[in-house]
Length: 296
Image 1 (tube, rainbow, N blue to C red):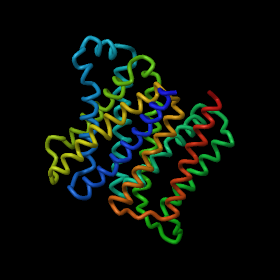
Image 2: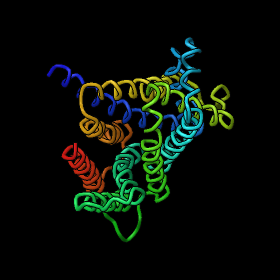
Image 3: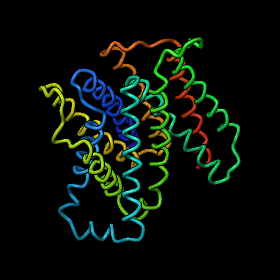
């Protein structure tokens, strides 16, 4: 029971770290002139190197991992998917706000289920169709804020948020095979490092043109260390103590945290329609998680 409680706390903490990271990114983009590419490159490269730090000093073991069939191909591919997920997520924040981006990111399980239905040719269940309908209604409410005569929220922001969910679903599905061969820290750390290196070609973290202050430096460090490295370690650690279903549900504290902090600290408006949309997203995720739990 003690380990289960600890796992629950870890999963909730991971969601809070992710949600607060989005708010920190919004502050850096709006107040300090940071470009989306600057944040993505620094986040991926910094967290990836930190995750791989131990393995850099165990070169033989690292080479052993990468010499296995498919690993040298799967990890770079995973890195590209992670890069696309993060890039589109930060673009969603830039075009809308951290709360909206986080709520839309919560639709990842819906897209994962759609993949299973269409790619694996599995007949959809009524529960899954209901989840998809809830997700669509939620996106419409978030996009229009309940005003169907005019779209009051940037449609571009919503589209970037949905693109991030699709890429996120792909990044959850793609590494399943390689995760059975090597440790998860090598897969995720290697993928983040690859994505960070690719992004650094266009946005070198050592040449960021922004308004560097003590606050912006602290926020940037927070995004890399807490919003990426610590959140990942907390989430992975929680999986050792509670089920993946429970962990995914508890990670929904990400959009809750992002919305609350956006409203309280940044003064972002929250309409009743957006609130209902957020609740529908959580309902869809809960229904999907309940189905998986019943099948386990």
